[in-house]
View 1 (cartoon, one colour):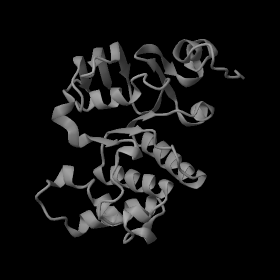
View 2 (cartoon, helix red, strand yellow):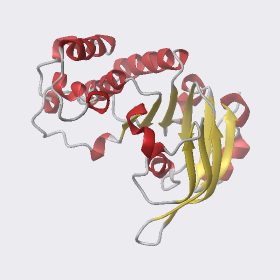
View 3 (cartoon, rainbow, N blue to C red):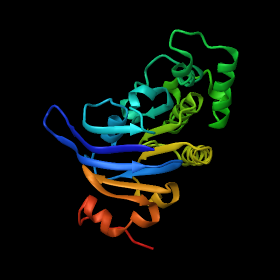
Length: 239
């Protein structure tokens, strides 16, 4: 369970990113996080990871997340990642192994086998020697997911993983995420495409600095909640 209690995040420029935000998310789940730009979606993931300072309480299964970081996999927005770093696909995926084996240890044959299996899962085994800066946006996002697979984390946090990727990559990623949920993982995804919400998420978290609504997707994905989050300008047909 991920618990946030009375969470407040204020950045140095005095911008309030999250305001008295509280929610409890039980897994396994694929929970979408939606809201307008500046709603605090990415900030929520960073607060869970203690990347940003906050007041309030964040717990994962009753523990401080700082104590169990190796059980949490995080993929930030692609715009925050340096594509020019000289590393190939296989090496990039192998970075997900180090939280479990230790950063100073050399990887063993079993570890590299895990990397190979993860690349097969995302259908990029033929790209293992390619430099990451030669990949398409969708291919690189699949590499980042493979890195999560080898980490074998219980909690997976993804920040807008479907932005700027091809439909094939999107389908592959969604299939893998659904399998991970079936295997007991808790997955939180910051998402912006409202047309895919009902297809991808069993639970939905709607925020705009404060909690607007949280629950089963079919119950909270309503015009009323969306208008409260985005304003009257949004128009979504309800089936």
